[in-house]
Length: 375
Image 1: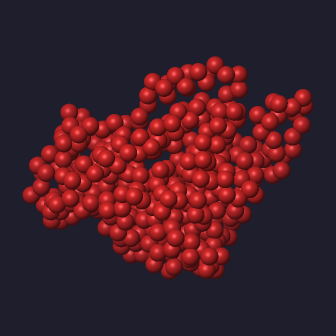
Image 2 (image 1 turned 30 degrees about the vertical axis):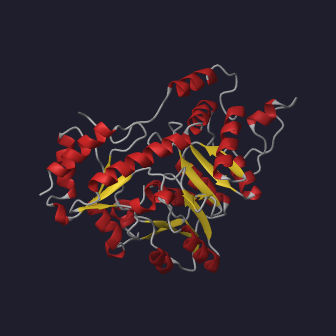
Image 3 (image 1 turned 90 degrees about the vertical axis):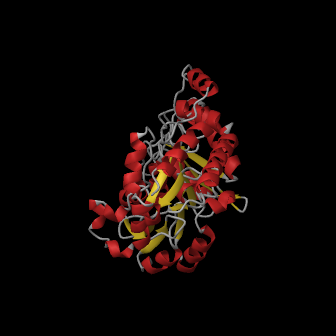
């Protein structure tokens, strides 16, 4: 049996919706994008939503729209995908890495230690779909007059006391990469309650124009527009937006399937010596983008050896993620001894197969093979 790490949930309705959209005369910056944005804003209970080309550019646009650039510092977790820090570099600012806590989310104590007179913002990541300690981060930001840009790439469908993540800071940035909780293949979304930020981001994603293509096509003079400031081509097209609308129609079902699969793993693995379950006790705060276990020395073999043995049985696992301070570019200004928690997590964490359509038979095969190799 072969078990992939992840399979996108693409239905016949998704395919029909995309095929139908391809027949439309306007294939970008049109009414379907607006529909996707409107539905996303409603689900997250945010005033505005702006569809963009990917989650990385969602972060980038949020940063520059908050006037963050050269000479500024932005605190990001060391334990995250490289896009979080790269977006800061793209804005001209400097990413400052902070360690994580046991939940794999950014450490409050580490944030406090990394703040300087140059710090202008914090980008907390809701890692693996689990809400970070965003309320405490808000207190820190308020005390030091810092912006908060939430990296919600893993966390569509994650709520903190009935409030969707991404609505606590200046903006929330989502990714619709194929492995994410919903997909548009490539794509992203920015949510905000700030009209000023919304207006700026909407213009910047479209070359800095003050009028969208949809708006211009409704006018008798579509060439009449102004460029407010130099912008980018970070639009989300109609085809991917259509897939997004279709995926949103069943997002709660997909979330339930992920949570139920995570609960099943937990019921079988929670009492196994050498396996520590990460973040499971907070199911109400977790959309389970990933299911991660920590393989400790009590298990009898290393995480790497277990990964190899599972791979030999057709089971795909991986590690999320290599800490940023281990990459050549970021290691120059970050000493490894500053990040003991992320370094330990890097040696122990293993991500198991999890996706909406995974079956108990597939999960049982994964579980049986994990237990088989315990010493």
